[in-house]
Length: 345
Image (tube, rainbow, N blue to C red):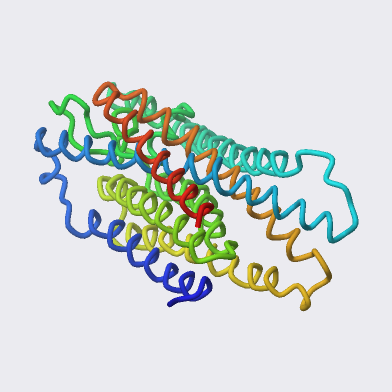
């Protein structure tokens, strides 16, 4: 039977393979013409929505039922080993710091998006200051104006697959305002890189949550949840990339870089967990404290993904709201039942 560390190594390769498979498939196989069928888009939107809602419920359960209590327990043990009293809700505070860290990174991303848009618009105005501008020129300037935060968030998280399944082809959510054909290559590439950095930070913390676990059951539980979410996320992001006019090489590099982030987080967490298990190799309680702090930070990341990225987007959708609610509850119930069974064994 595989031990916890061996399962983590297997998880590294499975996460990498799943992200590459679901991430590169749209780039390699989907053409724009193949995604214009309204029925096909509607079916794809519904399936992705159900799976994403289920993953949201699983992430909620992982954060509230497993990671946060485990981080609290580890912190209490670490405080005891340092002959200190655990008088404050440190686990919850650190989890909130992890949440705010991701929010801060998101805001920096939005700021960079807006600055890039402003700089591009200013350069266009200077370049054409002495020329007569046609209506199409004005339209171009308007289309390159910076997007709102909600537009940027939507473009990063998921492609715009029309719920009604009528006229709009599957494109990035921002394409109704910023046609990729009209955007300068420099601006499009920089935006993609900035968004990739933000999403990569999420993925590293998700992988870190796997690497920090000390038992086989905990590793398997969190691995399943992250693998499901990672596949869906890689698929939807890749569809967005596939609909842009970036080069095929650039799209492939983005997808591969994103796929590497969760395995990197697992690899970082493995030695920390091993040091926690073998306290004699470290200062008493030090590695235990590091493990607890990182798990609490990962909890904040899970909360952000659940309550800011997944649930609001899916529950605000016009279609299948009740079915998505059932999917969320099913995901939460599944992880809760697994944890209850483990505690009884």
